Length: 445
Image 1 (cartoon, rainbow, N blue to C red):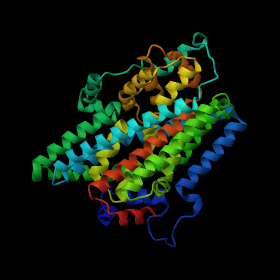
Image 2 (image 1 turned 45 degrees about the horizontal axis):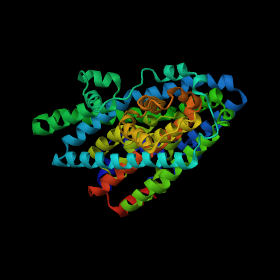
Image 3 (image 1 turned 135 degrees about the horizontal axis):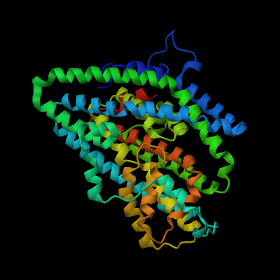
C-alpha cells in the first residue's frame, strides 16, 4: 500500500517531501543537499536568530511582523484549493462510496472522544495546580475594552447556528472566505457527484488531478520561504511581548506547556501505541511542521505539507483529504486543553468561586465553542471569550490578564492541534486497513 501512494498521489509530492525531509525518506545519494539547505535546519536557525534579535532590539524585531503575516497569508491562499482538489479526486477515485461515510463517521466519533478528554484534562489540571490562585485581581480594574477589541463580537454559537454556518451562501463564497469546513462540504458534494457520473466525468477528474499536481508544486515553492516567515513571526513575538512578560504569568504558561507535552506523550502516545506506531517517531517525521507551527502560532501553515507527508506514509488521498481538514475544525485538542484551564485561571485570579455544576457547564459549552477555533492564531482566545460570556459569574474582563501572553499559549495550542490531527489520520488509516504496521514503522524510522 505504501508503495502505491509513494510515487503517485500528490504529484509534486515527491519534490515537496524530498525538500521537506532533505531526502530522509530515500536512500542517501551523493547529491544529497548539505545540512544548511535542509528546511528544518533553516527554520530552526531562523527561530534562534529571531529570539536573539528580539531580545537585543525589541522595536525592530516587532517590526518584522509583516514577514510572518505574509507567509501565513501565502499558505492560506492555497489551503482551500488543496482541500478541494484532494477530496474531490480522492472520492471520485474510490470504488466504494460507503467508505467515505464510514471514515467520516468514525472520524467524528474519534474527534469528539479525544477533544472531550482534553477538555476534562484541562479542567482537572486547572483544579489541581490552580495557576490563577494568589493574583487577587479586582475585575473592575481590568481593561475590558482590550478584550472586546481583540475578540470582536465573539459569542457562543448555538448548535443550529453552527450547522447553518457549514453551508456557504454560494460556492464561490466558501473559497472567498477561506472557510475550511464550507470548502470541505462543497468538495464532498462535487466528489460524490463526479463519482456518480462515472466515465462521463473522467475528463473533469483528470483536470482536478492536474490541478492537484500544480497546487503542490506551489506548496513546494512557498515552503522555501518558511525560514523567512518563521523569523518574522518569532521576532515579532519576542520583540513585542518580550520574555519578561512571562514572569507574572509563568505558572500558567509553564503549566499549559507541560500539560500539552504530557498530553501528546501520554494520551496521543497511548493512542498511537495502540495503533502500532510511535508518536515520538511521528513527531520527528513532521519536525518541519512542528517548528513552523511553533514559530507562527498557527496550525494552518502546516496543513498542506502535513497532508502530503501523511499520504507519503501510505494513507489514501481520500482519507487524508477527509480527515485532516475535518480534524482542523472538530479535533482541536490543544484548544480544548487551553479553554478549560484558562477559564479556571480567570476565575481563580479574580477570586470567583465555581461550583462543580458551573465547571461542568463551562465544559459543556466549550465542547461546542472549541469547534470553531481552528488554524488562525488567536481564534482560541476568541472562542474562550464566547464561552465565558455564557457564564455570568466569571468576569470576561479577566481575559485581559492573559491577553499579553496569548501568543505564547497559542504556540502549543496550535502544535497539539496539528499533531493530534496527524495521529488521528494514521489511526483511522490503520483501522481501515490502508497501512500495515510493519510498513508504517519502517517509513517513520
